Amino acid sequence: MSGLGRDLRQVVRGRVLVPGEEGFEEAGAAWNLAVRQRVSAVVEVADAADAAGLVRFAAAAEVSLSTRATGHSPSAAADGTVLVTTRALDEVEIDVASRVARVGAGVAWQPVLERAAVHGLAGACGSSAVVGVAGYTLGGGVGWFARSRGYAAHAVRALNVVTADGDRRRVTAESNPDLFWALRGGGGDFALVTGLEFELFDAPELFGGRMLWPAERSAAVIAAFQEATAEAEAGLSLWLTLIQFPPFPQVPEPLRGQAMVAVDVVAVGAVTGPLRRFDEIAGLVLDTRRPLDAAQVGEVCMEPTDPAPARVRGELLTDFSAEVGEALLAAAAPQGSVGPLALVQIRHLGGALATPPADAGCAGGIAEPYLLSLLGPAPTPEFEALVVERQAAVVDAMRPHLSGRKPFTYLDSGENPAAVFDTETLARLRDIKARRDPDGLFRSNFPVAPPLGEADPSWAAAPATV
Ligand SMILES: Cc1cc2nc3c(=O)[nH]c(=O)nc-3n(C[C@H](O)[C@H](O)[C@H](O)COP(=O)(O)OP(=O)(O)OC[C@H]3O[C@@H](n4cnc5c(N)ncnc54)[C@H](O)[C@@H]3O)c2cc1C
Image (cartoon, rainbow, N blue to C red; front, side, top):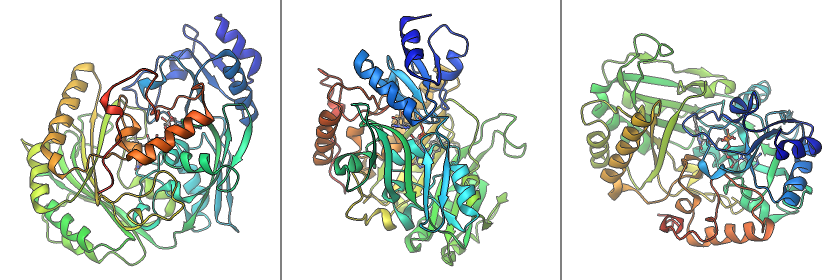
């Protein structure tokens, strides 16, 4: 047994695995299998007290810690660290009277949605309910209710954390305003979060689902999407996706290997009028729209729930006019299919995202009206190279319509938060990091500051919000 493994077992009660031991590879594997983090140990902390003991040990031993809930956003920045997994921090408490959820840092969205839906309440989850509440919310979180409620981070009222000195703290706007600001959008670089408390909201009348057409209808669907989003109220969220379904057995037979175009919708209340724009488009092969239970919002986009290797690239669009739609179609699907990519998605933003509250945390708001994301499978290094090349080509073609900023939760391994924040916000985050964690004990997958001595220009701040 390695010295590190032996030492860790003396201080934590959860499972400890080091390289070479049976179970290490499995415990170290992220949900996104495209990135294998080369960590020196995996520690599955048993509870918050265990996490605090681990932090005190790491500080004394001068070991850095990275943290994982589900591993939807692994990155090479965690290489060399001890990886803390929070799976055992799985409590979910719904306080109906105060309309608040208190969840452990290892919880995914689905159990929160299910428990809240029983009371007619919902939380600000994204497209997939197997994504972790912690990483999603610490990075802001742009989901189905972002137009009506803002970032998921805006709903946070308190975070239970272990700080770099090994103390357990309940971080609120009053107790630790600097940490409270940084942890709502700046990722996990400032503390080890053991639990989150956030507001739920009424979801009495939800309607949603997916409309799907063959890819030949893309131009007509894009035009209808532009018209519908131009008149959509904040309660109506519309996402357009150009899809190349993979030829895998998990994909239902009629869709397997097919190039398609989808519009996904979630409507809160009676705001579905703009959907008439899609009525005249022929060839609809699937329409799952229906009254939705709040626990079902994670099903709308039909995203895979099992681990898979993928590369993602996110960008913010300054507009999505007819000209931009044509440019996107030409760049992303030159032969009618987005392959080697699997998904090219445009999310309509705006609404509450464009008018953030004064206490929005470092996430702030998003002034850009649309989000572009490009996702491709990475089953082999060769295919991954094709995906990355196509992502770069599409981004190059779209550059005149991009603001140059990225949403935090869309960062991929190798990218950093300098692409997310403006100069002032980035400087404030780096100052908080330097004061709260001067020895770099915590290593976020997307650290706010470069490693000492790094002079790469990619660490310069993003342009100011458009
Ligand atoms: C299929 C899919 C769908 C998605 N849909 C959306 C979407 O609709 N909207 C959106 O905004 N994003 C979306 N994302 C991105 C998602 O929000 C990020 O991947 C997010 O980081 C996932 O959080 P996690 O905790 O599950 O992931 P993890 O990979 O476990 O965590 C990500 C990072 O968060 C930090 N972190 C996690 N837990 C802690 C903790 N306890 N303490 C300190 N730091 C911590 C760490 O730096 C960690 O490395 C999606 C991703 C996928 C793969």
